[in-house]
Length: 84
Image (cartoon, rainbow, N blue to C red):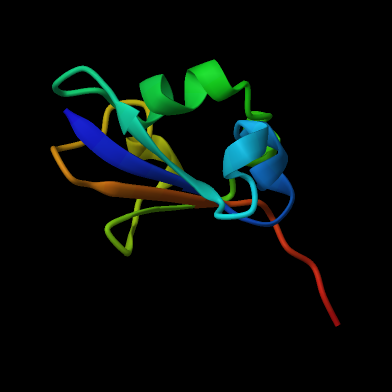
């Protein structure tokens, strides 16, 4: 199945070089793949996986290892952001 995987801010560096300017990549993943399974091949530092959304809905940290994705889902991840 296909999903869209988006990384924001400093996490875009973990995408393939040709996808960094658009901050997203279309992925072919196994039916029922979890957030954790999608993230794993990108080697994201888990301390940098702060805000996780599927189709714009927040996914709590405790749900991320088991939350399964569906065809057409958009998985978006932001790092912790500090500002003033």
